[in-house]
Length: 374
Image (tube, rainbow, N blue to C red; front, side):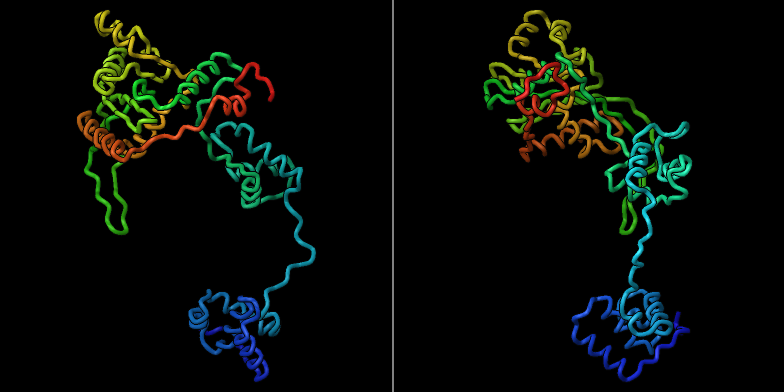
């Protein structure tokens, strides 16, 4: 595109007009840019493009418009046809597309793709032809993304047991800070131990870190998370197993080491079959088990209500900040989690829980078997 086949020859009047247009600066940016192109049209297209800071094809198009249609066409953008192209999908067509996108995908497919949706619209004779771009724009306009999904613990509707446990936990969260009776949330999660089979290549300027997809499984550990939201404190403990005795020993540590002076610890945890009072009697002599339970007040979150446990939020942060990598041994895992734990406690990070019982009754009405309208 060095020597253009469209040669621009300006008359004196045209050049004077263009120079005045540029110097006044009152026209649109595109008109002034096209005027600059015409004023420098004696130069090769790449040189003009670099001077005007546009694509060489733009220079070519301005030249062509000037030679074939005249000065006015070269300066101004082409006006749209007064009769616009009719929409591919009218209101009814958009409604059918949305219905299809929200339905079960075809057999043999895990999800709807843009091409599958376009093909289905043609197959159902809703349109003769349609591009995937048109389908994409329509879905975007209606905030639909068939290729994505969000996993969530869905609570049961109209379930008295669920709302009873939920409101019990929410009542605990609304209690004021009391160092003599701290509210502690507890949760646990399995942690996979993975070792590298080949040494990763460190990152360098212009190149990300490279890690072989192959790894060696080294078993599973369990992380026990205890956190006091109002006290801005948490403790993560790593265990080889997650039995009743493991849980009982962790709670013993909470009572005798973490909070030895507390009159009673209010413990919020999920209703896993290991989180039961009997675990203390299966782990300790009866006198000790009774003494521990006397200093403990347990509140269980409902089934399918793990989102009510603040300790789950802390575990999520731990996973994102510390565990999202390959850790080969339980010893290394303990070192890494202990460092994370210490730094987060020093930073005084907390959780600002906002949901109250009145909020739940208003926002989660479908969970209640019976609720009175305000």
